[in-house]
Amino acid sequence: EAQVTQNPRYLITVTGKKLTVTCSQNMNHEYMSWYRQDPGLGLRQIYYSMNVEVTDKGDVPEGYKVSRKEKRNFPLILESPSPNQTSLYFCASSFGVSTNEKLFFGSGTQLSVL
Amino acid sequence: QKEVEQNSGPLSVPEGAIASLNCTYSDRGSQSFFWYRQYSGKSPELIMSIYSNGDKEDGRFTAQLNKASQYVSLLIRDSQPSDSATYLCAVGNTGFQKLVFGTGTRLLVSP
Image 1 (cartoon, each protein chain N blue to C red):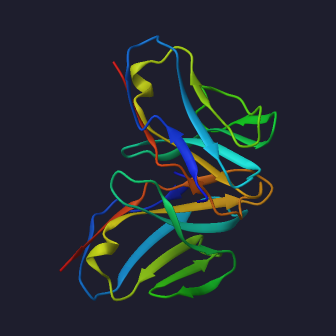
Image 2: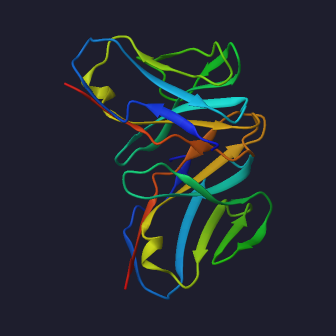
């Protein structure tokens, strides 16, 4: 089944404890992206990647890191999480890099930073 | 001014009625327009895309685009309770690998 797989689905952590949210797609998509969703603010892009080893900042990259060592994987790293990073996170991918392409979303990760 | 604006709702309609969802955008260079549906606690899923002025129909859904007015809408005919969800408008610029989402309109369809 074609899908974007995110793990974990729920995560509770404490301030400063490094964490990684994994994202993997099995559709051979070029483009991958991370979003966070907050009430009243909608979906905001954190980072995106147009290909292996090519990543770029979105609208809210502060406090996050990403890497794209393989085409299928695009992990999101929070090296020192803070409470303002409590949010619902979505990984997404698309076949091409144009904004004309349909985005496929993962099932989301609800992160709480205490 | 927000890049993509939507009324947060909720928009309440009775079953069988037409639901009309609206979205305005600020960037005149925008070339691609999408409507995503998001059920509570779930991920967004694409329901409609439109790239040129006019109407595009797909089953009970019609997307309407007016680039001169910087306005895109989604009509849902014969609304069903299962259509109750938040509808996200997304706008993309050709040449920019950026898709900007609105905050979404919550639709409630009552039986």
